[in-house]
Amino acid sequence: MIFQLQGSVWPDVIPFCLFNTFVTIVIYILRERDVIDLHFDGGKGMQYLSVLVSFFVVSSIGTTYNRYWEARGFVGKALLSA
Image (cartoon, rainbow, N blue to C red):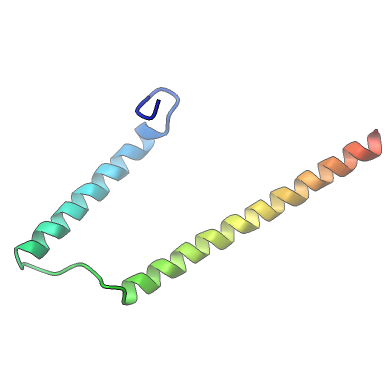
């Protein structure tokens, strides 16, 4: 069921997963051979990611809040019509 392609998001997502895996392997190989060190240790990169994640959480909470009020309006209309 996990690897089912029909009716799944895998055909849309798998190119991004493969690209991310490829980039990760390249970064690892470059670091192991002392060509260039592209990893980050919790400095500016982690600050950027934490701001990005908090933005996505807040935006999804706003969407959830709007859907809650929309559903509340529908329940109120159903109650008034009953």
